[in-house]
Image (tube, rainbow, N blue to C red; front, side, top):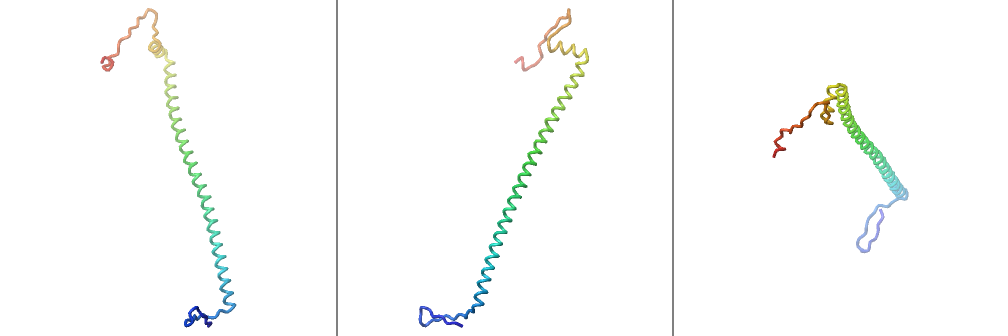
Length: 131
């Protein structure tokens, strides 16, 4: 044990005597601990960067997937409307092939009449128009 004097003459501190080998071992173990700590921090930082990159890629692909699904939905709705319009037009084409319907349509729409025929326009019986 080594006795070390302090500023006060009556008090002395007892400390174990340190060998050079023990001191070297302690400094080396401190150095190894610091190296391990630095490596751990570096590995943690790299892991965090990788997680951020992959996380952002997942979010971007999820957003793209969602937008694509929305576009598909909108396209399907437009397609259904077009199919309904096509169906109505095909019905109208079929009716226009019928001569009786065609004559009636032309008379109503364009106010045509057969030679010698008199056309009368009668008022519509609607209560909202009379008020």
